[in-house]
Image (cartoon, rainbow, N blue to C red):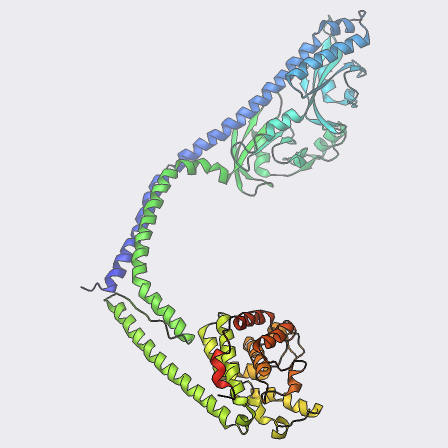
Length: 598
């Protein structure tokens, strides 16, 4: 029983209508998204507070260490004026520093300044600052233990921690400074960059909003999130707060971050865009306890929703599986439905190209099956008509050639037939389509049709032609193109008639074109025509047109001459194919009936 195609279309669309239902099911699985986003916020907040706590712990550790060094007995005796040499106190400081460096390689030096800011001793000559003008010295004179922002000393960035040294009456008599390589702070921040995924930004800012550590780009250090007032910027530069090498305190002016830094007293959530990442970023601002610094910790939205996607992966997978199943079923039905239509389309394309030898079959018994059967019947009728038309065209061409006055006497008819056979074999071995092969078969027969316009006395002249007579003979290419109809059926024949004496290097005639500008059919006939002229020279071509070629006694000799002029007169690709044809003895066997002796 035939199944109606309309019912198949109905069932296909029925399945497709189920997709919105699946979308609704998926939406219900995703509606808890807000809960998961809140969980992500808590994750970012926890990481921000973790990093801030680590920095606080290190700052506190620095303060504790500088106090322990300050309380060293040798140092106290030295400051009280007891008999302790400067070298001994320096050795003591170096010993303390060596002990610290076993704990961390970032500890760089210990410096002791007197109350006036003059250096009493230093474990290294690398520190060249005038510390007396810095907050680190001024705060210690006030009796405070102070940690500086990262600042440049020479070509290196340091963090200094200072502590006051007091006498028995609690008066500040000196200032002890512990210098630490700022890499410990930068590395602590930078290792957060890829911890949760690409694009995480962790930035430490001072109380003015100036970046002092950055996870992504150190070139952004010492630039402010917040537009600085001229007074603040002048103060920072004048105090060398960030080192003598820092001459510019710029501003990036991200309003959301600026507002957060100004108003944040505790962990604050905010969204913003960054120069380093154009996405919307989700983050927290956390204030430190040991220093009036604030930590910005953000991640791009794509990373922020990564965990949301992971949590909902199972629901998504289930939904996709069902959707794929429905698509597969619909696809199979549609394929079964449309297969005959595709066959008809492909057959129509081939017929439009003149290919009628491809049957169209189907096992279907419905309306489409009947349509395929009728189409194939039409193809057979068109094939029969096309074959009949080809026979008529060929017979017409043969008759046209034979009636040309004097051609049989000159042997030109045989030359044309052999050239047609050679050209057809070459086209087949080049893998060209059947339409091209069929067309070149009859088109090559007309390549010398223009000789009709050449006076008979020139064609039959036994002596060498004069230059003027030779030019008249060469004009047969132009006459041949003009004789042939302008209809598309004769397009290839016109190309061959006009250009079959063009050379690959552009030295041919009538137009002197070269390489790929010469029509493919004309390049094929160029070789076939010359091969026949070399192997059957009697009465087929004037020696003046063969130029430097000489008639040959065998196909091998003729092939060698053609190979000699490959890339000069002949297309090298076609020449190589022709060589294979001749060496395989695939040419000439079917043309014996076209020789003058048969």
